[in-house]
Image (cartoon, rainbow, N blue to C red; front, top):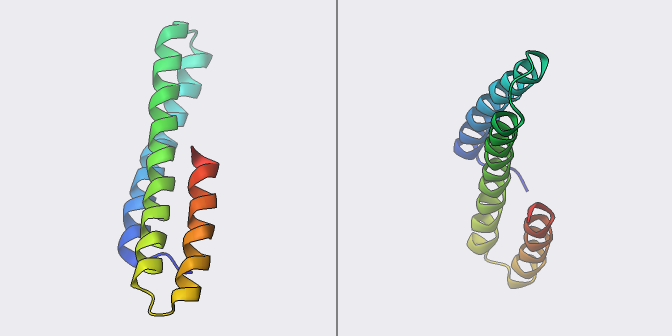
Length: 88
């Protein structure tokens, strides 16, 4: 199942933002910043990555629901559920 172009664009933006946050966390660690500040930023990065994953799964679920073939839809939804649980 292909990810829709609009979703790819949105997820790519989220991942680029997360990439910048990760660089920021590395800089914080290297400069000896406070543990609480570092953990707060790590939590923000983690949330950004989760949101990117959930956006991909939501797009896939929408495609599953749009399918006219009930057997294909059931199989695809099961795969998406497994992917969702891998992020949870």
